[in-house]
Image 1 (cartoon, rainbow, N blue to C red):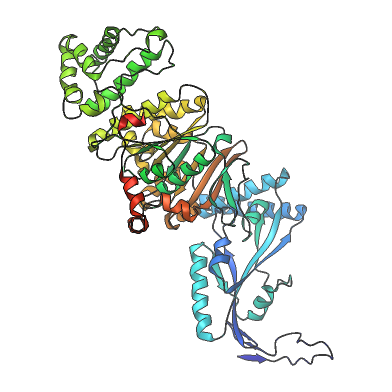
Image 2: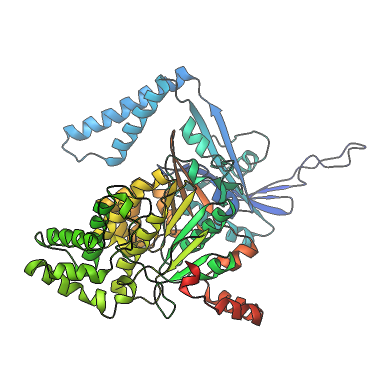
Length: 597
């Protein structure tokens, strides 16, 4: 061990030392005054990175000094070096081919990258830089320094950074991390403009804040992410996350903040998670099961439909009955269409829009018309009988007792048997879709647990049609699901995603990350982030005229918002205990369905 001591005599009136009192050098560390320091250089980087990808290094390694040394390479020298590098790589590939060896994928990838970089340099789209990334860790003792060094190595490994100690050059490494602009290690790598910009640890990937946007969360820099979905090319959004990752929390927050902007919100709630929010803002709550259940007549026509309203109603009834009974045979579909026309004709309703205001027939009328249509119709009527006059008739076989009309309308499916949730979901979406006829205003339809509908072909077809047509009525569709497989396994589900200009991916399950990564073209770093990010964090994918923008976000809520949107059982019990008894009784009181219409 070499001990170097520098004695400094302060000049009169200076009042401070010009450097440390002593330096003690070892091969892997240096003692500067009373503290020990160890320096490292980064020699290996991941192949694919996103903007601000080095920010975790600053946040996690709070006891480390990070220095990024940059030197621009003149274009003629850069072109010459790239030409020689491409020649070496091409020579290596040819030698391997002549000797009958399998091509080295690392060499092939390096050759492709060098060719692409040379092309960008020739067009003036990028420049070449030499950059070195150095780290220094300090501690008051050797033991503490060893612990911090191990922690720093673990952080670098998680970022796929290969670090080497500045062995026998610890003094040079320490000087290279001081704010002096000195690079005494000279361990540099070539970077182009885009890669270097992404490597700035303090680089922020904040999207442009929309003037009328609502808060979705915070970017890694702490800047608020303000997004107006109605300013995008379409108004739809998709929210995918594993169970417990905070997808319903974000969906409820978005609905609440859209209400503040005057947007009418419709919610399909399979698990009764939106009841508290609905009651708190004075919304309309429509349960489809229980003693206060409402009924929705599937044969009801829109109040402002055109001459095609009857044909469209026949198409919807075929989709609904397929969900109830299973796939209909080729000879059953014409029988069903004839029965639909017959029961409407018996009620005095024709293609003439002036007749559409008359009372609509019921499902029992459709069953009677099917029974009178021969053996094929009688077979369909027999299978449809339980929903017309049996145990499940309360939902499908009565005149509508409520309409989805209000600033916030929440339709609850809780209490329904699993086999009826998909048909009930389709019935609710149809009632909401019919209510969109009329004066244009901003609206949002939120479908939670959309996998219930996507697992059925008829339901997937209806949701796809809703995603394609909602923009014409100034309406945005929000598709929320925890089972991404049902959404990605069909062409209709992929089309629902493709027609969503706003896409949010929260934490994902390891079993689904490959499928999601392929569908959304995620890089390796983005896949790792979605597997390890905390609850309420994820990626926001925005489509705009210049391409696609991806921003890591952290969902945040005020204390008042959190009380309304949380679904944590422990917090719900605590909130119930703190609620005044009179307010608790008022919240539990349920009005008659007729009063909500």
